[in-house]
Image (cartoon, rainbow, N blue to C red; front, side):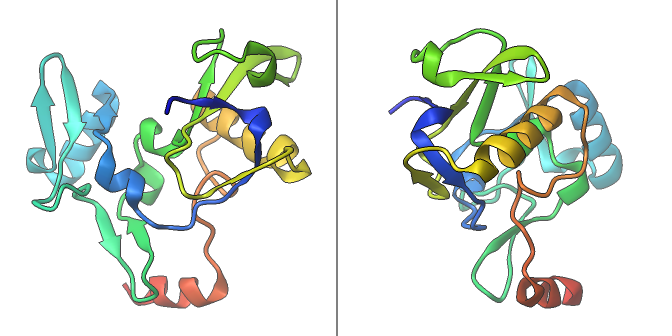
Length: 170
């Protein structure tokens, strides 16, 4: 199943399952590759034909994916995550690509964009779009994708107080 227009989605929330970090190849921009290899060494990435990719563990998961005691998964890069990781499962486009142009159309500050979501993500709840999705989640994804925002809140796993206590220990 391909990407679906945002208007079919009630809400999206990262549940920290790590499925995206196990199932997909992450293509890095040159600057992302440069920053990651400067910090962690070239061994955490791999080169392809005209592309750089995030490295994988032997189980197929991202080299920076860590399990935490409450059963969720956490990205070890957090503030240095590649843009592909920051915006998944959303696709923000200037023109419709996956059909349903009317349902994918999203007006952000007077600019018409087309927003699609990968239905593979288990954090999707189907139905009429919620207020939070329209006014908080999608705008944040657009700002992250366009480089207007670095910090994420709605577009990443949110740390509950219990999770934060586990996170501080590591």
